[in-house]
Amino acid sequence: MSHPGEATAGRSRAVRVVGLAAVVLLAAGVAIQAVVVARHAHTELTAPREHGIRELLEAAAQRVPRGDRYAITSLARTPNAVYFLGYRPVEGFGLRGTPAAVHDRLTTARVRYVIVLDRDRPKAFRSRHGSWYRILATTPAGQLLELV
Amino acid sequence: MAAGWPWVPYLARVRPSLVGQVALSWLTGSALVTLAMLLIVYPGLPLERATLAAAFAGTFAVGWALGRRSPPRAPATLVAGSLRPAIVPIAISVAVLAYGLLLAFLLGGIDSIDFVKAWGLKAEFAFQQHDLTFSGHPSPHLFYPLLVSNMNAAVYIALGHVNDTVVRLPGGLFGVALAGSTWWLVRLRAAPVWAALAVCLAVTTPEFTTTMTSGLADLTTAAYLTPAALAAFLWVRGNGPEWAALAGFMAGAAAWTKLEGTPSALVLLGTVLLLRRQFRTPGLTAWLAWFAAFVVPWQVYMRMHDIPLNRSHFATLYLNVWWIARHVAGQLSDPTTWGVFWPLCLAIIVLAIPFWWHSEWKYLAALVVPNLILTGGAYVTHYRAGISGSVAATAPRLYLHLAPAMAALAAVAAMTAWNGLRAARLEGVEMQGAGHDQAARGRDHG
Image 1 (cartoon, helix red, strand yellow):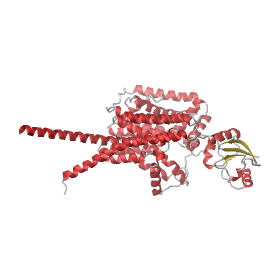
Image 2 (image 1 turned 45 degrees about the horizontal axis):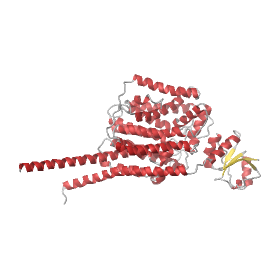
Image 3 (image 1 turned 90 degrees about the vertical axis):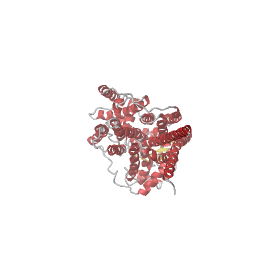
Image 4 (image 1 turned 120 degrees about the horizontal axis):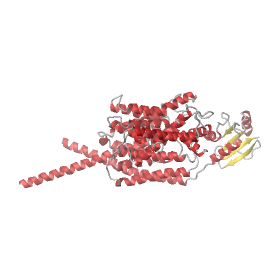
């Protein structure tokens, strides 16, 4: 049977160990975090910086007359389009399907311009020389099309 | 910074060190000038260079006049301690902050979604329309508070054109101000090495450096919530109203930065009232007055100009607690975003419980931990009702609001452990010394 004094000493030793562990963890943790940030910085600084979408949307902002109806092929990039053009694209109709079907839907919705992103290029816009649209601008991110 | 300079001693009721003065001046100046921009458009005046200059000058003049009318402020007393052991963490912090600012010059225009649909777009409308009605603005986020978008608008007005590369820099300076204010507020109660470790831990995460210049409002919210929590801690530790004004100002500015700042600030106040066990505690009026100064004008203005709230915010509630817990745990342990920050801080705080539980720092834990737990509540609601993916995309960023305060808590928890170990060692040496003396005396007697 252990003496009460021994139990108290054991407990205080345990407390000292966890206290020391907390201090060591802090010192080691700061060093680890510094390495993590250094590696992150290296990745960030060496990664290619692409502003292709920005370039395409700036071109669209210059060429699409204010108020004219336009569409964009990526729902996720709608906020970017709004930021540069100042108003929302036409939404709610599909850009998937055959070129004829998409053309019909765009005409019905009175859409005149389409911003096509290469990362999200529907089948109807696969051809870079479509007969029913002409290309107003091309950037590494995609094209601005005007329906004819 | 110049506009906020005379306000700092007035709010803090002491004269801070240079680092604290500079950091808090940036925070107070930014909050007050952006608030003044709202007050300018209230009577229908346009936002342009002349009125913006008046906002800067008026903010400085009011602060200067209040300072003249107040009793002279004594220099703040910092805890004594050698700066030498703090040099390494300070050097790391400076390097990381310099890198964060460097990104402002390297990355070009901002394309982050929240910037282009809210903070940047609202700034552009304010710049073009010379008011804050955002008429014709297509975003559903018009009701968001204005500090960040007004600051961006002020940059555009000063430049005379929209430039979303330049606005990365003032955003980054909030990261620097957060570090400076944390350093000074922790130094009021801790030796340099612990304040340096608190700052170093706070700034050395990829999330911190990335958000410094991404055009988002999360780090700015953290820059206000952290001094709000630390000043609330000092307020609790005193018996009077000291520190209440600074705590209330920073809490109000957090609410003026982001919606989530409001509940976090109110949790801080509720904790102070609970800890002081007194509803009408000294300083409560000052805290509430500053909080209201930042919250009420925008709420009134929104109603005057029919700026709608997002009524679908609570239309769908996500109550899958297991999914929320797993998602939060997964996000906070993601090394590419946080390194080992969260497991590290939590481990230090838990291990050091036997030391800080009986010290004054338990009050800081009481101020920091509830908000950390309640942030999980953000997952149950979202502005895009019915789209659960949008919850997952946004909610993890909310933890950045609390991360610097968590870092400060971890550093002081380790400090209490270190001090406890040193005290035990000294006690042991003294007892050994006493034993030697007794033995010597025994020999003498023999």
